[in-house]
Image 1 (cartoon, rainbow, N blue to C red):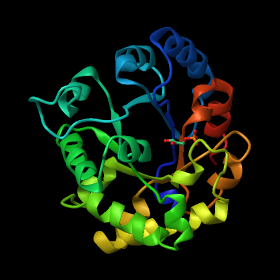
Image 2 (image 1 turned 90 degrees about the vertical axis):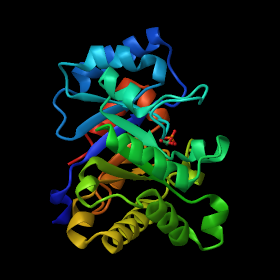
Image 3 (image 1 turned 135 degrees about the vertical axis):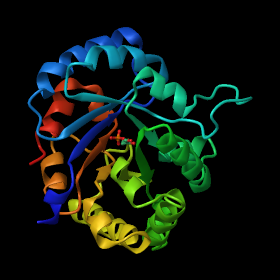
Image 4 (image 1 turned 180 degrees about the horizontal axis):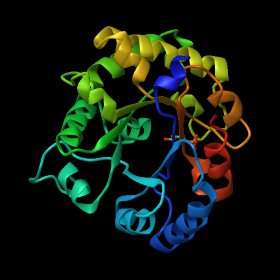
Length: 254
Ligand code: 13P
């Protein structure tokens, strides 16, 4: 089965949640709960908690992600953080192109691509998010939207570099709404994204690419979603803030 060709990855996207004290509590709960996981486990924490998270997880199976990085290596970009700054802290992953960044902070597929280039050039691994809005879906253009986001996001990336890139399919209408895509809907789009990756590179590269689903994934629906052929993990928002729920999702992977 092709699923065996790729790693399964469960990543928590904490978004703008958790102070340092709350971070310490959540990570101390998580460490014993997920230590026997068979999948890769990542937590995406706010910039201010990266150092704490890296220090606390250094002898564990939990990896740490930042939630964004800038494309320039340095310069007059007030409020921004460079990929090199993340790398220096010991960050392993960076989440790029999340729909909340696209929606509220003017992120475009072009700037996602620039950030992705900077991340790879600094030896960071990337979780690149794509996904359609409700009106895109209702207009029947889901495939067009995810294809454009994937193609532009991955432009000028080599197939060798794809080993450091995870794609997260996150339909905007399913994020934080409690409205999950059905496992068939999610699998259908993930499968389509894999075809797009095959068209950019080749089938072998596509078969090896981890494609997660994100959007109201929780301890109850994770089993069903993760059993699908083209769903290789999850990017979890709300449920990643509760250690028990997040670990249930981690162990829902086969
Ligand atoms: P929820 O799991 O809260 O719907 O968020 C999903 C998400 O945006 C993860 O990046």
